[in-house]
Length: 162
Image (tube, rainbow, N blue to C red):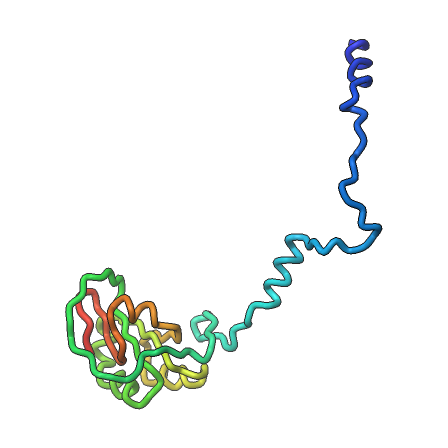
């Protein structure tokens, strides 16, 4: 057993010294730890402006290429788990919301609001909506998926209508 230990001590691998690859003489290397990189990235990210009533953070303004217009009713075959509608912060959308309020409540539709500049505007629109949930968010990808370029519009499990 003693012979084995002496043999291991004589082995050059055990006595190998640390090889210095670079010596910056105490100067910064420019390399940052992962924690520092994450901290810097977080500091560069924009901070949302206003908390919504449901606890989610909203960013304003929310703008899109969609505008007020007329939509012909058409069928679709895309998956929709919950009926939703898209509207903007304008008089036509507010009137549409008021006119369709009972039906929207009956089908438990979710409201997606675009072209809204502030949390205050969203809050005013929420007054018209009553208990219907409204969320300000970008809607371009949704509108593109359903081939919609105008609002207000209601999208249910089977059709797109105004």
